[in-house]
Length: 581
Image (cartoon, rainbow, N blue to C red; front, side):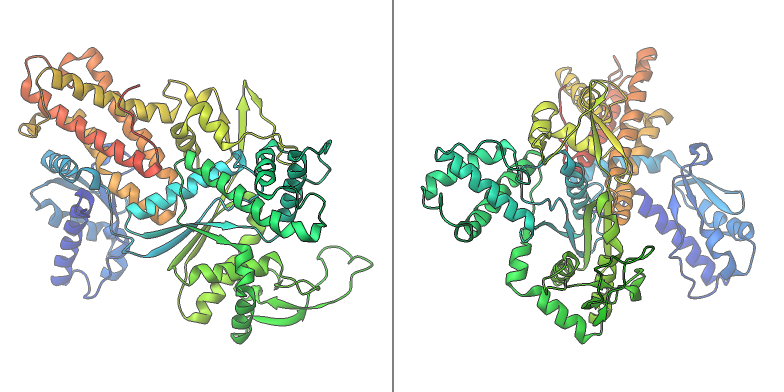
């Protein structure tokens, strides 16, 4: 692992130039450089790198940004590997690098191999990423898929950026839905024992996925619960049903290459008295009080509404529009009360928390953030907490939406999708749009062999490199850095893009946005395929040029490095870098 990439090296040069100006009195002592950035300019014609240093430090220097920029530019131009430093606009500084700098980065990519792009910005920070957390009442279906992929890819990005990541799944096994599961499984159990159960009663789960569960329970338990009272069999079938559904869910997730580190049970949370402990702690720190819940806003209260004193969490203190009850009038816990205790439990072993939720949970974000903020304030330990909301995916087939209903048992499972189009297609496609944006998953388009299909296009670029390297080996050619100076501007375009990979990893980790890596890989594949296209009309631009051994070896060295970056990026997304297509 190494954080010393081209961007960090030149950021250090900028900081060195600023430090020289501090020493000369052009900048005051103690000036912070924290807001100084160095990044590619939006318009590549402006140069290789751009810095805002003069813009953000001019006030401290008590001078105009352009005047400060000229002083900084003069320092930077003295560097051997900076060809020019030009002041632009109100005070930006555009740098053009000597080609040797880019060739040096190409060697760095090759030397670091799989470690290129890995970062230490996480500094071992423990991050708990909770994702999927679907009710354990059936197989994983398309409604769960996007959040599962986004959460898993985010965990990978954070690990690659140096965080210690715990992948967690919260099992909602304490609500009424698991009693419904138990009753549904019991009916299938009776069916397996020979009883004609007829149509599944309204309100139970009708899916055939419970048929093998009923058959297995019939084999293991015999008929002793066939005619037993519900109070006797319900706890048994609840536990058995949840356990078997979780086995099914884990199996479905494995098809997507997803494995969680921790499975936290809501039922176990209650059994351990965690909500009671959370309430006591919150009362001790004056975050919970007994008060009367206000009637519904914007309309007259129902005729049977009566003011009831309930334990209320002071969520208005943290920006919520009203304080929230943690218990119901019958003394049972509200969902929020249990969720609050769960987040307190997670924060005991993590420095940061990230939840991946469906967009239908948007209404609960503010109150849970308030709860975690209270935890931070009460313990004096800041616990950064982020919630990523994932929009649903519209499935399309033959140009028509695919309708799904879990209650009717009519839905497309993750297993169905993976069997039809493959794990890699599902994973990459789910990352081709920002998670907060609506997306369509068209079964025909996601397997299309065209530039309009990002997953195919990126994998094709990698396979193309592998094919080129195989062909070169057959001709006795091996990649070599002995004559990299023969690479020209067209090749340096590729190196520039590849050199952005470490920055993209860090940006994706900081923003908690793994889709940035998918976008970046598509851009890198586009640049690579554009270079290949040059060879169609200009034979001297092919990776393997007849009778030009050194040029060919240098370009093969470039191709191998680009392939390495493509592989690393795909690995972070959990997608295989195929070698043949």
